[in-house]
Image 1: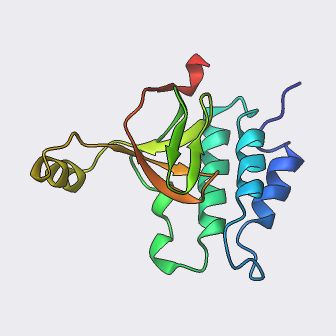
Image 2: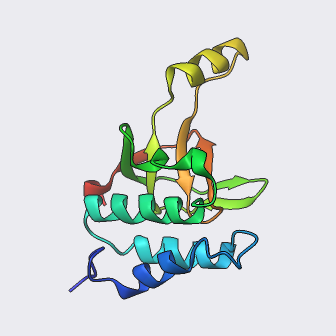
Image 3: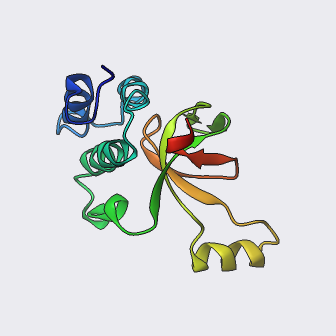
Length: 142
């Protein structure tokens, strides 16, 4: 039986290890292991919960992020291609992600710069929100 969010001790252990006080910087190896474990969760709601909790845990010492990833508009999907940033690989093709359509502010700023607006997703691999413009599909279509 494939693991669910509630029965996956690997996911729970990795989330617990995020954001510990002794960790001065985000551990990308831990982030990659957590992303790989979340990719095995079959329930979109379970994946959403795990990603939101992981993000909240990793950023617990920053009060401005409280509730950020559990708010309206965040959706679970599977990303269609690899996304690389200056911080390294943010997403691998097939990663289950928590993403958000561009906000009105994002659209206005992009228009001012003459660029298309980008979606935002939380990168468990890098530990940050990441702007991207690649295909995503609902998790149910995996």
